[in-house]
Image (cartoon, rainbow, N blue to C red; front, side, top):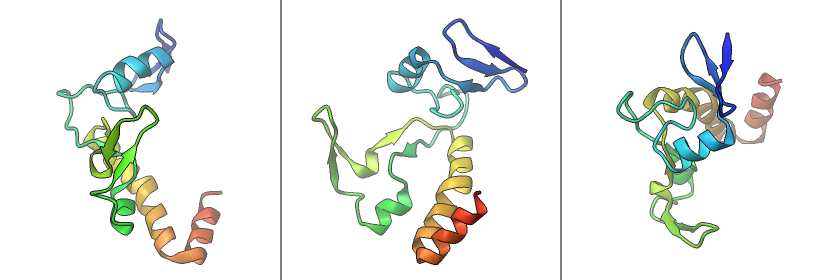
Length: 121
């Protein structure tokens, strides 16, 4: 069962995980805070290892670790340090379910990418 918080966020009662972040909560807890952007866990409650905005496999493939990106606010960030707060559990799940299959499909060429698309339908 889910419950809606006063700010509009939705919480899974069984696990206590955030199913849906309200805009206010996302800005406060993720953008301005240091909570996991997927489950909402606070640093210190769980192990964190943060998620790269561009996955590490992509940074390796195109040798981007030491390169710099200029953000829309004019700030510059080294790609290897461009991360979001993410707990180790969510980061591992995202790696297993999204990043690894996508990396393998892209590395495998067009046929592998087509196979991945067929599997996800």
